[in-house]
Image (cartoon, rainbow, N blue to C red):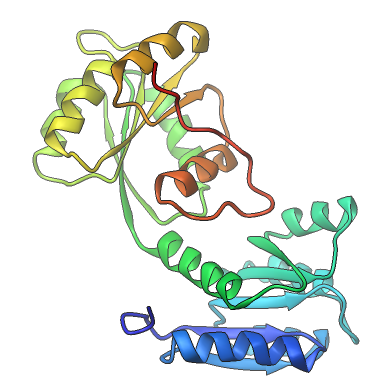
Length: 265
């Protein structure tokens, strides 16, 4: 697991020495190239985050000096790209609201184990590794809007655009795309026809069909057999993130919306 791991800097902030040791041991045993910093209060966490480029931070919500939410608030103000995992024995609707607002990726309820720590790091690796996405819509205005939404995803996406199915197919000849995000209603070649050709051209591609006519598109998409997800316009970055977690077989974070894969008929 750890032999191909890049050198990441990981902060563990918790006033419990047991939790600090559990996380540190999980990281050093499975990801020996990573650097782990251990702190026991919120003030120390803020100091580390201010002076170092931390990749992943495991942050306890209840710490002396400064709470985990205060640490998250500092991260948001600094516009840091740190991947934050919050921890506590429980959470409330209010704390979950602030965790989402302050950009926490996930929440781990104590007690948790080594597998949960490794899952968080594996999720980070997948999310930060570049994915090739092809956006197809015959409307330039819609492509601009969708591209802005897609650009807010937490996933590292390289986005290419096409205004027609034919243009998309030409792009696929030179780039092995991971994701196809295409409109349903397009002239000459609609989204379902494009998805069928794309699947033959790139067997590993995952397809998301966008539509404003969900009732009409659903039965046709189910019969097609190659559509992975159906997405109703308008949508938001969190909708895409939920889909991408499923596409890449990643555990869904606590805060994730649950968008189910398309059921085949």
